[in-house]
Image 1 (cartoon, helix red, strand yellow):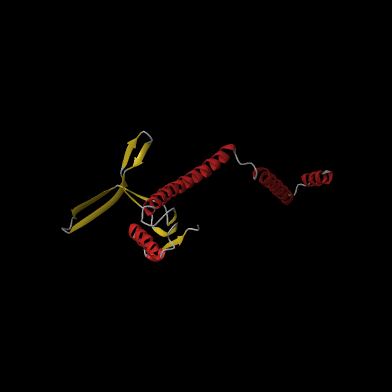
Image 2: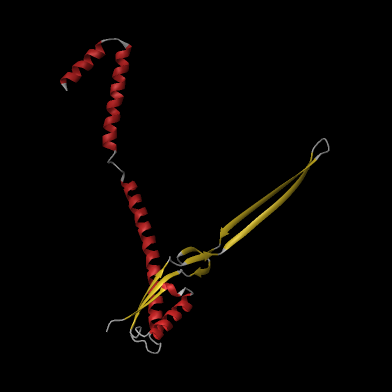
Length: 201
């Protein structure tokens, strides 16, 4: 450190302009290095709070979508188990349904379009017609106690990718066929997407 001070005092004693420029550059570089190392880890408290808030919102929206898919899936599985259990020759039933995605909610959209035409005549007697068309779509919102929410026209159910059934009595090929046909008709899927297995005794 003492050697640095000695060199600086020598440079300051010399009246050479290049030495002053070098000194100025050294000071700037020193300042940049110090500010870089002290500023990298100093994220402000508000930035940390914002990052945490955004990540929590992402996690909440993902978990909400997952829970909606699971609740719909669980309901469909329980309903199917109940119905299949009523088929003659079928005992206990376990069902697993594989869906492609979650429900898709289609909002109401207000379509507005405007068309305006203007005709201009210039000083030489020529005419010019200008036409302008604007289209705009806006989601229709309704006010509720939870705030403003979009008006939902319809909810499209998720596509069924496959169904697996484990049932008592499915070792009988006729019962196996009836279960497969019932599921195929109910979910409008091909029979190759339905797998029916006999439950072990």
